[in-house]
Image (cartoon, rainbow, N blue to C red):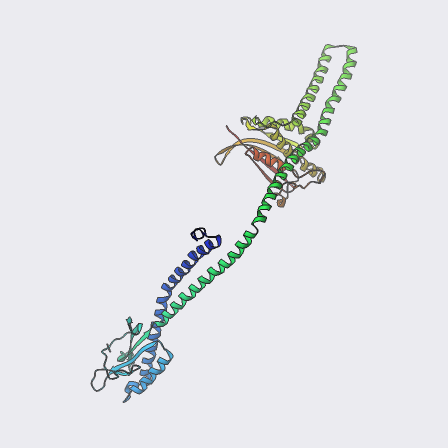
Length: 473
């Protein structure tokens, strides 16, 4: 029994919390409301008493009841009519001077006990007076005196006080309203708590019933996540191979051009050997050596790009890496007649990164720019195509960053697609032209290095990609 009391179930705990929060809140709000409302209601009762007394006083004056030989019956009829319309009136009396004795006398009252008793009242008061009273028998009430004024016959003459109306009006109605408000609030609070407990109990029961299914779904999600990561790794390698495949044709063209030059100059050399001449030999050999050196540079760049990437980070010169990447893409840049401009910060030091992963990022970004400009050239043959590449070191948010900015005048990206370009498998290219994974892989590699990739664009005009990598000066 003790153990069950110590370990309350979740539903009971929630019920106790709701009761502990909602009930006091309702009661506090009601108490505050009563503190504001009660004085207002009590003042309304006072105004009712004053209005009733003034009405009776005005009727006495207008009907000249006090001038009658026996005004008491007529006055008491008026008193009974007024009490019938205002049941909160406890006592209602009309007091005036006795014409025989000159002393104050009650000429009408709703109280039958001691009808001939005289109450001393200030007959000559010229204003209404009211006082809040408490009586053990009657409870709380307003004690009100209203003078009976007879208007002067002469204009601007003073009014004559001929009597007074004494009224006691109960505020019991206010207490009844406040008590009703308390009961209503308590009932509403109890109903709210019970309703919330029932609703929460239903949902808790449903949640517990589905708990096993949720756990099974979580297990399946973990398995699917692992499978997705595996597929993602394979797709990254596939994407890299696709990029290398696109570059193969450019390499063949670039290698073929200097080889043709070598063949031509070799033929000329053969002819010139028959004639002789040391100067001519040196010039031809210089051309041949230059072309062979170019072939060697291109082949080395190709071999470095297709080699198994190093997983260890090392100090990388971003400017040199950009130059090497541009050398690989130079045939395609020349073929599209793209105006290439670069503004590299020469004083920027190296960053710590995996070289071939950064090169893969740059190849993807630059190839995207070239693809966009190639599509634009098909639509507008005379369109100006340009790529501007710049690097800089900057301070942001208290950290040092090495930035690479790539700006192109290609087709741009529609505004509605700008938020989706980094999502996996999103592409605006034809199925045979792209997988939609290039920018996703770039973003993953950038995040792996603790950097950021930002893309801004205007449809039909330009695209700017900013690559940020952590940088230690």
